[in-house]
Image 1: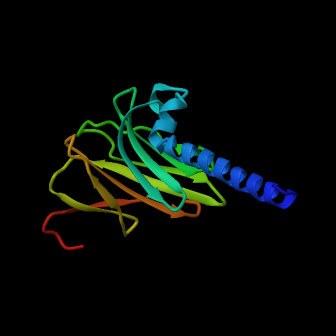
Image 2: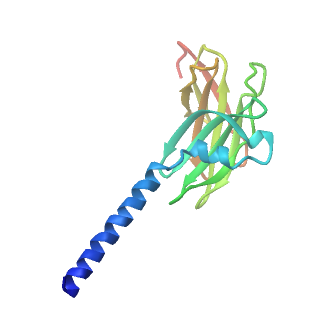
Image 3: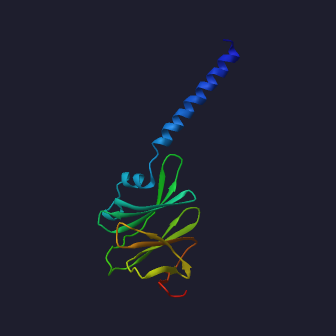
Length: 171
């Protein structure tokens, strides 16, 4: 083998080796919830016990989970090259039908952003508006509640107003 052939062989071996490393890394990639669980929150409120839903948008994730207190919490996470960054873990909401139903949390990620989310315990509620914007709804078949959520940009100085629309009502 001459020098040119050795260089080509070396380059091909390096490319193959890098491809192998990337493939192994991608096969071992954790989900946002698995990463969150490994971080072992500072309090029972921020420590996940059970994942309810992971939602991907852009390079971010919203993870709804049941925490160590048995309440619902929400984490907003950003995808990094080799892991995730936790941008915000919001407060917790009780699963109880007689509790406060909505939480608003803001975080910074290249400007102010926020998430408004809540628990719907009434099966007659078809949709929820947050400041006249329709919230997304997650049906949770495991439990007797649904989760509504909406994200936005900018600073919110006052908590949003929520309007629950019952089945058969007009908006």
